[in-house]
Structures are given as C-alpha cells and as structure tokens.
Amino acid sequence: MKEIERLLQNNRQWAASVHATDPGFFAQLAGQQSPRYLWIGCSDSRVPANQITGLMPGEVFVHRNVANVVAETDFNLLAVLQYAVDVLKVGHVIICGHYGCGGVTAALENFRHGMIDNWLSGIRSLRRWHRDELDELPPEQAADRLCELNVLAQARHAARTTILEDAWERGQKLAVHSWIYRLDNGVIQPLATPVTRPLEPGS
Image (cartoon, rainbow, N blue to C red):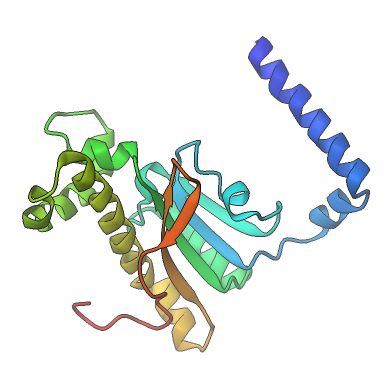
C-alpha cells in the first residue's frame, strides 16, 4: 500500500504547487470544460495526451484504449465521441497511435493472447489486407508500418461515424487528424492531411 500512498502524496504536492503558482486554477477548472480537442489514443502509459502536447487539464478531452481502436460497435468510444462533438463542440478529433505499440505487435504474432485477440481482430484484418507491403519489410519496420496503417484506418472509421457525418452535414467545422508518436524522441508526426468533410465511398 506504500505505492498507493505515494501517489496520494504526489497528488497533494502537485495540487499545492499548482495553487501556489496560480491560485485561481482549480476554481476556473471546476467551473467549465471547453476543450478544443478530442484525443483518441492508446492506453500505453508512455503516451500521456496532455503532457506530450503541452496542454493543461481541461484543454483536451481524452479517450484511450489498447491500440487506439475506433470500433463502430464500441459504445464507450461512441459516447465519448458524441459528447465531444455535440456537447463540447470540439474542432479537432485526433487519432494518435505510437510506434512500438504492444497491441499492434500482438496482432502481428501468430499465437493466441486471450480475450485481447477479439479486440485486435480489426488490426489483424488490416495486416492481411496489406500483407504484400508488410511482408517486404523487416519485422521491426513491418510493425512500425502497421502502427501507421492502423492510425490511418482508425481515422477513416471515425470520419465514417454518423456522429461526424451529421456534424459536417449541419455545417460544424471538424477536422480528423492521423498522428503517430515516436517513443524514442517524443515527437508526433502527422501521417495524412486532416479529414474535414465526409469521405467518398471507397476511400
């Protein structure tokens, strides 16, 4: 339990430090939430959305899961997406993956991992779809490339939800971004031009 007590002590020290620097910070934070960004990222503890983007609490609305999957059957994700778009009126939906993603690596492996295999089935399908390209690469590069392909696919999934299509139809300005983060240097790299309108069929 000492480890948990350390977290609580860290929290008290952090809160005191923030209050000393900006006495009105927590009162303002409690008063409203008006982020401009929805971050859909991986659950990996090495990819904290606020920290790597230099944003303060309250500036980014966050949803995280293993391998930053946007599944049209995931009601948790859809609830977050709808709240961010319809209530918070975010202007940017950021799908951010990262190189060295354990979920993507698991999808490349040819043995069972348990229940997580069901969650990663879409990435396994993506691997089969791009088999020719991936088989030409050394294993580490193939894993990195599948991380990129996964981000691009999840961004398309987000853009094809009725939530975003309805928002664009009513004239709401929204951009869907495809980003990937490199753990060994801390840099985010955009992978594609942001999507700002409904996708054409087959795209």
